[in-house]
Image: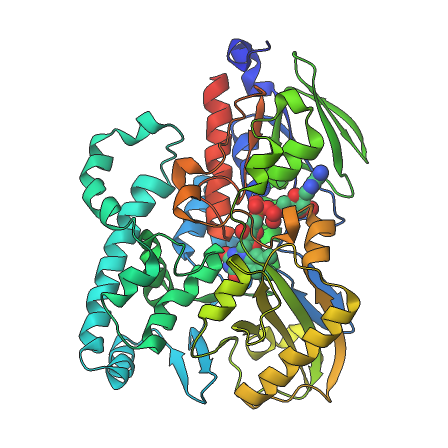
Length: 501
Ligand SMILES: Cc1cc2nc3c(=O)[nH]c(=O)nc-3n(C[C@H](O)[C@H](O)[C@H](O)COP(=O)(O)OP(=O)(O)OC[C@H]3O[C@@H](n4cnc5c(N)ncnc54)[C@H](O)[C@@H]3O)c2cc1C
């Protein structure tokens, strides 16, 4: 069998194809090019950025995927590795409030950076909750710092990597946090609305309070303390920054280049694509892991069988409505959540009992509140995102029915009636996630962060069955979200560089 370890003398001029240009792919391409590799990124679609695509039409511009710029420290670290900083590429605007929540009983709250204001808000729901918030956030900051240092920035793919003095020191905290988020949050807050506020960020991780380990309470430090930002021109400016950085390092990008087969020639790979064949020594796949293994590799080079992929817990898919509307959309904020007071049914309809949620919890994003350039004058751009079960049937008839439910719900619970002033509309759901990104069951985010799919229980960066093939992106560690995928790209590149050193 071909062994990449014996090819060490060639490493620094070795050729690599990165299949897929999501943040994991863009990041690993930069690290590899910086280490001297000759890197070509092959992207199926006509634009780079993966799920961070952009939709432009009729004077409106929408970030189609990520819209929350969280964990600015991770972006600083990424660009810092190359002697650059985010502000070399884009400006950040802090959002105030971070976001607004409409509860469907008519109540509404703003989450801001002002701790005193937040304490008063929490106290107004429950005696003692102001103090509990301080304590919760203090602990969540501590967990964030330990987790970033020990488990996010440090890749630990093997069991033996966990037998380390620092991990042992962190272990008591880790073990305490193997319970679920709903249990953990209820130790601090009794009021269901406060519990919802502390738990909603889990949706960013593709999970639900009952199936996500409590360690992810660190997301509240991200949410409350580190702040929520808007990069000038939207998240696409972060994609452009990564691409520009890669170009300066020598990365070549080829779009409309869907990889159709990865052939292991033993002395390297032939990567077959719509844009031609590429003979290289190494391959990094940023395409969905399940797609790469099941569609691009022969059976004997797959690490997992079909049963494995069918038994995973996938993150939700989404029903997305991109809307250009006349006039403004007060009182929506840049980020707005609309939550039913009892949301258990919605989570059940995502994870246990797949169905279109009849009383949805959803997210509305209005970048035109912050950025004048994303909608024509006198108009607003807005997208609605309803998390739904992956694999749901999303026929035209179902979408038409559901679109009306969502628009009626927005009017009823936020007071913003969009129905008669929509001048542009596009939908994106299970079918588009599957077709545009080769996503398994149309999942929007990949493998959920359940306990059994966290840390070393996620699929590895190095293929165990096909030496020379590596994986990066949200299916691998550390996991879902733009910052995590940037880190994933670093881990994957480090694995390849180490293997050839
Ligand atoms: C609607 C939505 C909202 C989100 N909101 C946020 C947010 O606010 N903040 C945040 O941090 N994260 C958010 N996320 C999550 C975040 O966008 C993702 O976790 C991250 O962008 C995934 O990056 P990735 O590296 O896994 O690659 P992906 O973005 O999944 O990209 C993979 C790429 O591979 C390409 N590909 C697939 N098959 C092939 C093939 N055969 N050949 C070549 N190319 C191929 C695809 O076209 C795609 O471009 C959101 C995601 C979605 C969908």
